[in-house]
Length: 128
Image 1 (cartoon, one colour):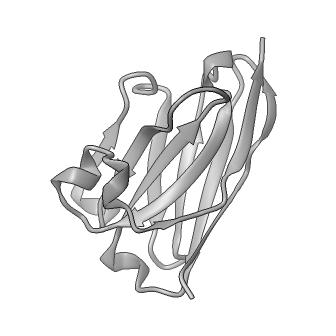
Image 2 (spheres, one colour):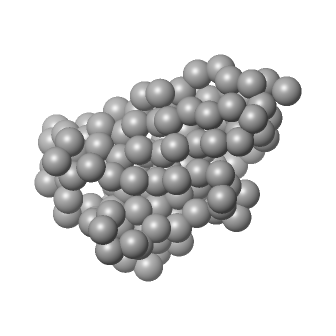
Image 3 (spheres, rainbow, N blue to C red):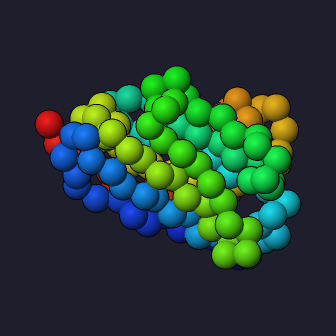
């Protein structure tokens, strides 16, 4: 069974940091790209960050709203992807989801329909 489990969310003050984890099981982890998405109340889901199969080849992508503040990484030995979030803002408040998909241009561009497996999400709340 394919599973993606997010963790690391919580309540933090503006300017603070959190590190989200996405632990995968049930599939060959290093065959797939991973994306992070988020959805705030009343808003559409948006892509946050992408990392290709191998973190060493430098293929990452970030939404403009998080560039310079968020860093994505992966540890294929641990079947885990991380999202380090620094300088958090109240507008970062959302449920964060990780998803797995093929490593291609569409997933790199965080097209959500290209991702076939999704986690249940973890809540991030940033207070002002």
